[in-house]
Amino acid sequence: MKKLIRVIPLVFIGLIAALTLTAGGGSKAPVVWPAGDIQWTANPAMAAMSIAPLWGDPNKGAYGALKKVAGGTDFGWHTHSSDQKVVSISGTIELTLEGGSPKELTSGSYVFIAGGTKHHSVCQAGADCVFFEQQPGKSDYNPVKMAAEK
Image (tube, rainbow, N blue to C red):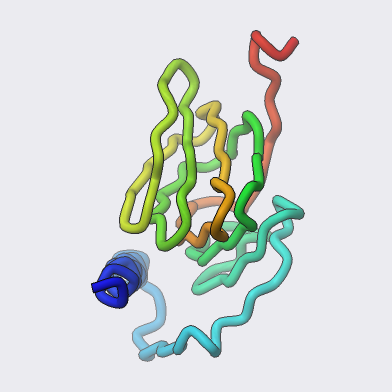
């Protein structure tokens, strides 16, 4: 059962990737990357995070990527310049949107965050958080001060 729960989000990510590539006019050549072949590197936008680009270039523009952050990492309040579509794969991310209450995002959870939306995210301690992210613009991280912090 645990194995099935881990596989379902990966299948979902594959479907998102396929839909994005066909909708965006991307290459029609098949791409198959077993988990062991995926290349993780330091994320240019956030030092505490690793990234594995699946398409596009997160340093320059539109992309889809897997991202990984260590359990216990708190990114504080921030925004991104572009809209984000995110699917949680493993770990638990606590996400709070400005004016909202915290939500726990576990495996299979989906989030759309419009560019410029203030939000706070924490990868809860106990396990690394891995998620799929798609943006129409380059990857960035813009810290913001909230009224209570000033």
